[in-house]
Length: 359
Ligand code: GAF
Image 1 (tube, helix red, strand yellow):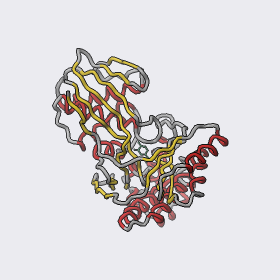
Image 2: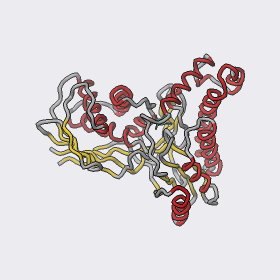
Image 3: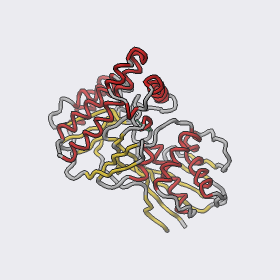
Image 4: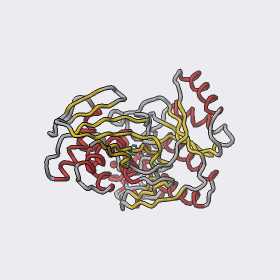
C-alpha cells in the first residue's frame, strides 16, 4: 500500500515570541504544503526531492549527520515510543511547495507530517493534539531547536478559513472564522533564518531572566509592574518584557477587529507588532524593515509585519486587493537596494495535516 499525506505550512497573524512565554498566538495553516508518501520497505529510509537526497536511518537514539533527516528520524522514533513497540520499516518520500526557512514553519510541517503519516499507516491512533505535543518534543529534545508550540499546533490542528486563537498557558484553541478576510500575502525576504544559530535562544533566555527578576509569570505582568522593576531589569530586559506584554494585548485586540471586520485597525496592530519586534524585541533585520516601510506606501495595504522567529524569513501582509504590480515594484526596489531576489505570493487558509490518497 502507498499512502500520501499533505502537511501545511503556517502563518501567524499576530502574537510573536509569546508562545514560549505562556501567551497568546494567532496562527493559521496555509495552502502551501509538504507532501509525504509512505510505503512498506525492508528498512527505514527517506528521500527528499528538495535536496535529491536519499538517506537510510535506524530507530536508535543517536542523531544523524544530515540535519533534515533528524526531523524524520526523531518523528518516527517518538511515534514508535508512544506506541510502546517496534514498528515495521517504511520508505518515506518528501516533496512540496512550501519554501524552506522562509518563516512558514517548514520544519513543523515536516515533523507533523511524518508523525501523522506514521501514526495512520502503523495504526498508532494518535490524536492531532498528541501529535503536536510530540512534534514539539522532537524539535526541542531530539533536533535541539528550542521553539515554542505554536507551529506544531497550527500544522496539526488548523482548519480551513479559520485563524486559531491559542492560549499557550491553558492550551485552549478558539477558531475564529475569516469570512471576507483581506488578501494575505507572504513576502519572502530571501534572507534565511536559522533558529539553531540565530538569536532565538538568546531571546528565550532573556525572557526567562526577565520573569525571574520581576518575580511573576508573563501573563501576570503589566507595564506598571515592569516599570517598577525597570532598574533591576535593565533596559534590554525591560524592552523584551514590554514587547511580550503588549503583544499579548495586541492579539486579543486583533480578534476584536476581525469580529468587527475593521481591517484598517487590524493592519495598525500588525504595524505596531512589527515596530515592537524591531525596536523592543530586536529580531528584525534591515531587509525586512525596508520591505515593511515600502508596503506602508501602498494605499490598499492595511498592515504588514515580520513573521515567525525573526532574523530573516518573511513579511506577512494584509491588503484590500491582490498585490500584483506592487510586488513588481517592491522586487525592483529591493533588488536595487540589497541585490536579493524577493518573492511574494498570496496564501489561503487551509486545514491541518490530512491524508489525501491511498493506493
Ligand atoms: C518560531 C518558533 F518555532 C515558534 O514557536 C515561535 O516562538 C515563533 O518563532 C515566534 O513567535 O516560529
